[in-house]
Image (cartoon, rainbow, N blue to C red):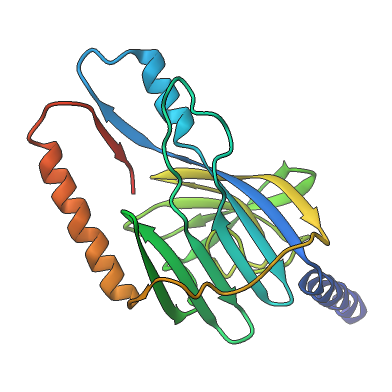
Length: 236
């Protein structure tokens, strides 16, 4: 029995070291959940708005460092609708526990430096598995009372990374939450990636940025209540 446990531990360690030394690139697609309010708005137009709101992101990971950033929408505007993708970059250094983010908020850029912390959730590992892009993934459910989420992570790619930092022992390939669905579309092993921390933008603390966003969202919600026109609310 001890021999089997030792072999299993050795295999896990080899997998982790092999994955950590590899450069892995993952393309994700994010579909925000939206509330669209407009009297007499054509159902086809609503569908086009939702389609145009999809966002593509790329994660690059190598040797304990990663960059998760939004990709420009290269497709032609659908049905005359073009939703601009804001430039957002999240750099994570697992070796030094540092996170540096660039956030584009209403046309203004902000640089946020903080400690790399696990998302504020307690994860319940389930027995559910499914295949994503040829990899067997395990389902974990968030026990965060404020926001519920479930993720599918891959133990065969034992990298503690993904669209956000969960601390789970595997690369996260899918996230389903109250406000969006994020799913991996493509995985490349030993990809050619440029991993570097962002440097531009006005320096601001995470607490200051969160307060600014909350204040702006409340102002927008109050404006929506006045009525008139088309109201598009992306769930957050």
